[in-house]
Length: 524
Image 1 (cartoon, rainbow, N blue to C red):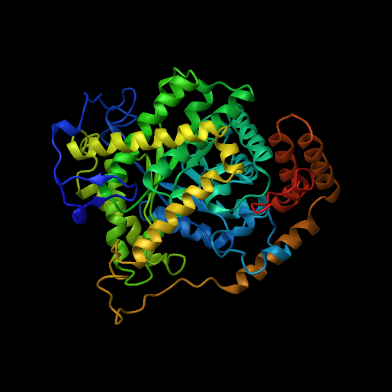
Image 2: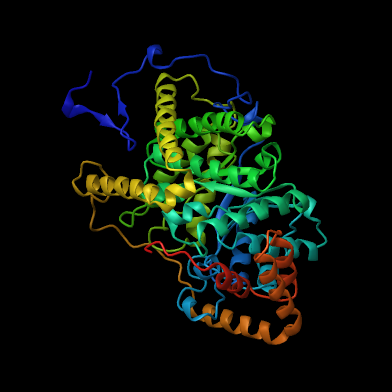
């Protein structure tokens, strides 16, 4: 046994022993593709179908982001992933005073159908899978995507992709919420029902642990809080009359691939095992596709350092390998310069090539669950599952994820974990190469992407021109219908779709809902 001053702990407080044996891994492993899917949701995993290389991209206006999409697709990317700017995520149009200085800065600005059409210009939506990282106004952006596809002659039945649509994690980790939790949950389940009828191949939610981990949660907390949110979405969907065997097929998850390689592999495996049991035992699901957790992974943005940024290339490669050894269905690899700015084309290409090297040169596609059965991995999987179960039970005692958020429990747990982590870095108990060890003041500068301020002015003029040119009476009628339906139990997506088609903007529709439902104040 290690001495007290030689103890090694993961960020979840799991003590790592000097050596593991068969005594640390109990039980027989099932095959990949078999319940509870610890070893992967599919029998052959990447031998049957490689993961989707889905690089997250978006900045400036629709035209700039469209050019980046084409750039990445021409270099071998296999799926699109859209980053929206802060005003779009918060339901404000680009000419709103609250959007000043933020338009196109952290993603692409989308105000209307015309913007969405420009974003996907020259990209056949029937042939590409698209992920959209959007939450509070997720329904509106999905409807715009459907309308663009319709304009291309592509029916909803052919559209593939994922809309994040996970507002609960916004209240605890990311802060990009608009409405209070309960009406937000209504929008989420309305989207579930709408897609079941019109976009049956689209994943209706990506339940996100990524941002929970970025806010400072440990691996065990990321696992528990993400699955607790998933339970809340399932309960809301069932209350809305939906079947877990049906909507369960379209649920997906989004996890962080962080620094501790072995713990991350174990976390992904534990997530599948836990979720299979939750869907079967809590909700009575019997459909294997509803039981098998599928997930997208992104390498850890919070682990990237501004100091010696080229070190981040190594960090990203190792994190990406953990996601693949853990069985991810799609993957984004961060660019090395993202601690400093949005990625340049050069940095984005290196991130893309990282995935391509992992796919072609490293053996990641040769066998399913390559680390399954390793004593250390199995012990970590079991321990993370145990810790997550304890946290989920605590959330159940508080009344579920929504109630736990309203009471501040989840926020306080994440804040305490983040404080511990930062304290360990500042005391050098936790080594970060280039920051508190092996620092190099002579490290050279890297080229950074600069977003032209004129893009914001141009986008503001565009939305003003759009309002001038549209049919004002049709827009007013569409917004009035949204207001009427929002006060009932009817599905909100059909009237929102009609309003968008008539020329209403994202900000205008969100404004109608704000007036009716109010906004969420985390400090109230």
